[in-house]
Length: 106
Image (tube, rainbow, N blue to C red; front, side, top):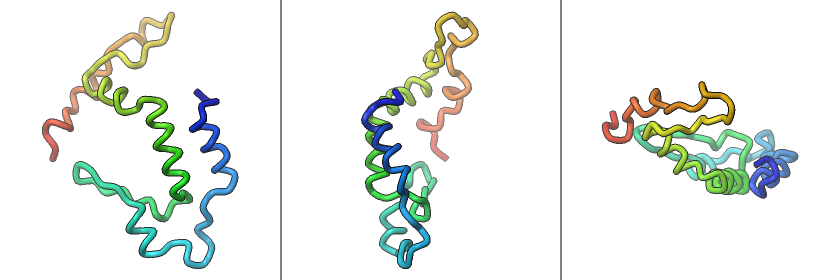
């Protein structure tokens, strides 16, 4: 997976991350635009060294790696950690499935 287009894009972007030390690097518009919220949790990332290109590349990586279906599988208690030749890694991830955070949000 390390040679996927999304990973290669992120590696390239990492060579020159967003510079927070420049004048007007952190503006009210940036802080307003660079946030997300879900389940009562707010993520503020406007003070991180990312820009729209970085966020788009991370989103592409999540899509490329099928993160949402893997998270669902994990929440459903499916086997997701299987490693051939290691029986101990062929088990359900019940610790996550038991949290039941999506059906009963706080």
